Length: 159
Image 1 (cartoon, helix red, strand yellow):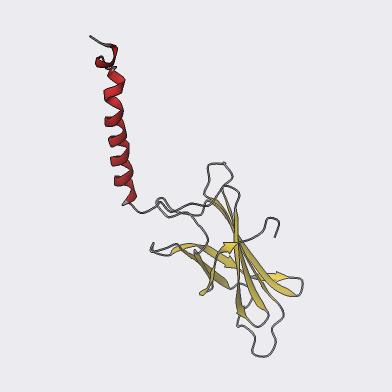
Image 2: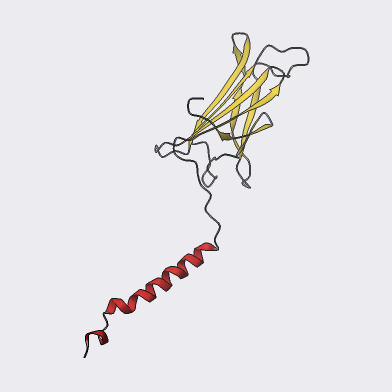
């Protein structure tokens, strides 16, 4: 038998492998891409006007490998009320609700206001504030403070 007539077993296997790889690629091509989650340590934030002299700030930092979903901080500051200012007072509690995509809103907690110097202030800090199965926060998630929404967007580190 001539050398050209003897075929190596791998010579017959390569077309099968190629067809299998092509079939897998076609099967995956029809699926929607997975939603990218936030990179560990990435930062998101937004601000919301609560009325004249009143502002709320939301900051989120994705978990940095600590096994948490991240840290969420909501801070509210109300300067001394001017005429027609917001009807906020010491002891008021503002709800903080998070909405991601089509998931139902999640009440993360309440920001209680109290006097600090000449201004009303309050904050809410949470580590991993999400119930099981709640989507991870990413740019575009909406955080409502006192019923006023703001949309999270990327922000520079240290800001």
